[in-house]
Every structure is written in structure tokens, then in C-alpha cells.
Amino acid sequence: MRAGVVELPDSEGLYAAITVADVPKALLRKRIGRLGRGLARAVRDAGRPGERVLCVVVLRGGALLYPAFADEFGDAAFCMLGLRRVGGDVVTEYRTEIPGGAYDRVVYLDCVAATGRTIFAARRAIAPICHAAEEVVAVVCAATTATRALRAAELGVIGFSLHEAETSGVVAPDFGRLDAGEVFADGGDGAAAGPAMDAAGRRPHG
Image (cartoon, rainbow, N blue to C red):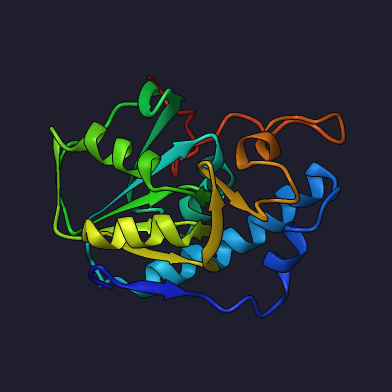
């Protein structure tokens, strides 16, 4: 899917269900996890057998998709980037070791893309040591603003709803008035999501 835009069908109504207000966070995480499995399968199916893949997990939202991609892409390399907005910029606060080299595909994982700035920051973070023949952004949803910006930069975009509205850098409807980071965090309705594990069952280092 070179620089393409692929909107996946919401056949089970899961995406519609996570945009409803006041859904408990534990249930949101469960539904996003199921969407993540469908997303991971679709990204895998769009590739080629034997390709070398790097999955870049953008924290915190991308951590909700990580388990599904770790299962589907057990033979891929993974790294995690903690990014934070500072004014109009996005800075890297945390990273695991980035496996350098040449890849057939680099897949950026995040739940929501509002403007594309976070993905572009992740791209800049790995650029010095990674070369990608193809780059794909895998999200649950994105604003039209982000989809157009990513497409113009020759990144493919795949997700369940890629033409949402965006106001002041926030996607509407988002996840029932919560952003992906808030869904990932513990809200008192269940245990917080634990530290992500890599595909071999190891905790990421960094």
C-alpha cells in the first residue's frame, strides 16, 4: 500500500462503540484491543512474505495497539517512543533502543492522528539510523488534516475512520471525550495496563 489510504470496515461496530461518552476505560481498552487485532491483520496482509519490518510504537496511545501487533508481527523489530507536545513542537522524552538498518516497511502505531505532527516526530527520531522502503501509519482513527498531511509526505495510512473532524489539534469524537493516553492510564475502573512486553516476552529497555 505505497502511500495509499485504506479505511477498514467497522463490521462489528467496535469503532462506533468506543466513541460513545462515559464508556468505562477497561471496556474501551478491550474494544480498542479487538480493533487492534483487525488492524494488525490488515497491515500484515498488505505486506509481502519475508519482508523486514520495524514497528514504531508511539506512546502512550500506541501501547493499546502493541499487543495485537506483537502477536501478528512476531518476527518484526519493535521500538517505543514517548513523545510530548511542547508548544507547537513534539519532543522525544523516552525511547527504547531503535534497531537500525534497512527495512522493507516501517509501521508507526498510534491510536489517533489529529494533525500528523506526532508521527512526523517519530519519523525524525528514527531517520538517522533507519531506512524504510515503505512507511505506513496504523491508527484507529485520524482527522482528515492528518490523513492528508501524512499522504502528502508519502506515508501510507490505514485505520477504521480516517476523515474525522479536528479542532485545535484534537480529533472529534475521539474516544468518548478521552484521548488515547487517558484510556491507557488507570482510571480507577480496573487495573492500569501493565508495561508492554516485546514479541519475545521481554520488557522494553531504554
